Image (tube, rainbow, N blue to C red; front, top):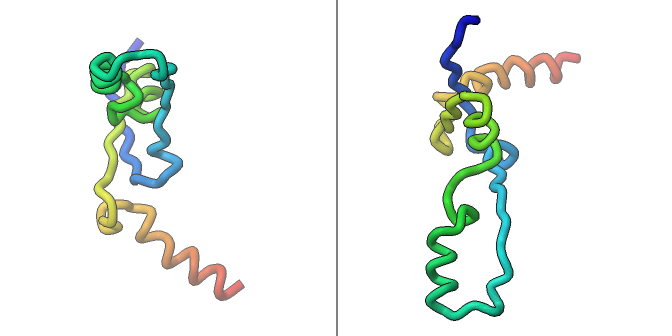
Length: 88
């Protein structure tokens, strides 16, 4: 079986960057315990669902920088889509 290195390039749309968050009940803990838990808790690390899924299958997810439509190939196709819709 051939193993391939796979990389996925996605933009920073909200649907691609949804975070997975699981919080414990902090009400019964002391302030120092809460601070330590917050620093160490995975909910406060910038890992999102797409990165977790990619890691599970050995895929590296690369996010495009925000507001750089020049780097996103689909942006160049939108003008053709808009022209098609206007004509039909």
